[in-house]
Length: 280
Image 1 (cartoon, helix red, strand yellow):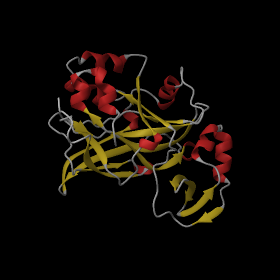
Image 2 (cartoon, rainbow, N blue to C red):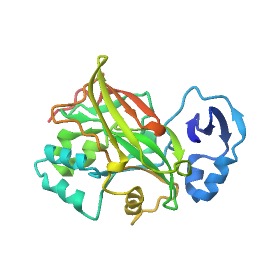
Image 3 (cartoon, rainbow, N blue to C red):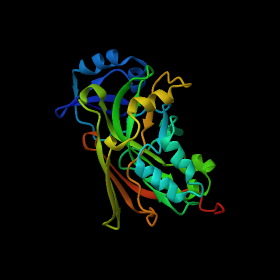
Image 4 (spheres, rainbow, N blue to C red):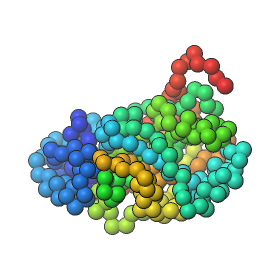
């Protein structure tokens, strides 16, 4: 199975433990149709050493979008936190999915670096998700794993606060590689999430994209309804793992996500925002 890594702004193709460089950027590949991009990736034959450091597999200008309430567990979790729970029940059953802007590529945190929880929030969770890498032709170029960090207290207070609950410093992790879609016979991905605190596991959960109510292609179709993505985009597909209401992340926790063939994420947690800002 091929994997695509980004190291020092260079794309590498890994196959059976051997690495090969290609001259094209991820932006180049996602601007092409999938047939042309595939031919370039499969033709890569310039051997290089294994990278000692890999970046998040995204270019700085790429947009990251996200879908919500695509799993039954997510619907229940959102209803638990909200003063208007019917909104989440309705969107789960509606034809139109929830899609929101998450981040731009230069804000995305790679595997191993700290993710953030807002200093003005008191209820924060990680959200393990399958991430679609979509090209400009609305084709699913590949898959990776991600963490859509979320402030449940802010979103629960008022759904209009969703951008503040979802889009803030160090709130988005993607990594560490992309698996091309043609390498996957059946796009069903189990994944697990765990949180360690001072060396002790304080939360663990598992789910699978097989439990999604909506299909990947359906979500991509809605994203592209009135938006062009000339250099491609990343699309989080929602989470099936939502901790109980009693759980919140603490500074110093370590979030671990295992996406099986999509790889792993391992990120410590830190507080973000100015220390002198007024807490509401």
